[in-house]
Image (cartoon, rainbow, N blue to C red; front, top):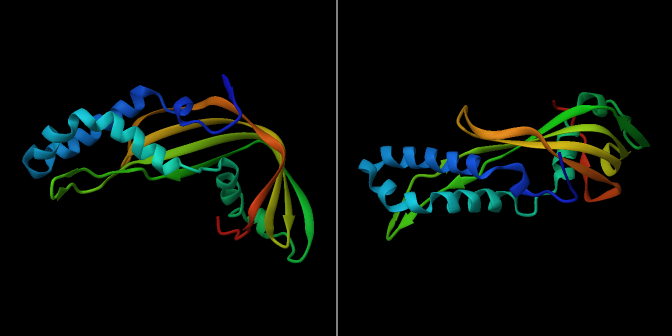
Length: 184
């Protein structure tokens, strides 16, 4: 397993997965407008797919994404307002979905958007949260294994669980504390 110190799409999604997404986009474009789009854009699909995913993940902070998932836990919602506390979380899995979208332009024409779902999954071994007044303000160190899956609708296009290991920094402070809603 590869260890990474920053989130890297190149490690999480293989070229085969991105190619499968490009092939799916080509299928959808071939069905639209009598196939005119497919003839124009098929040569660009691989690069455009990678670019669409990269754009979606630009500035992605995996720890903020995980904290958004934790903020919906009912167990954390039970914490009293106005208090400071540390919460240790044992082994668990969190998932976060992105929706990269492909749209093509050719002259004055624009294709209908083709939306994919990229699910980033983290199997977290252990982590400690600092909670202040029902807001997650910091994360203490830990380690997780990351994986990613790419789908169109319900159809899997590729990806894998636990591809790489990501070390959570020893003391990571959020610029904006994350409110605990407990809606999940």
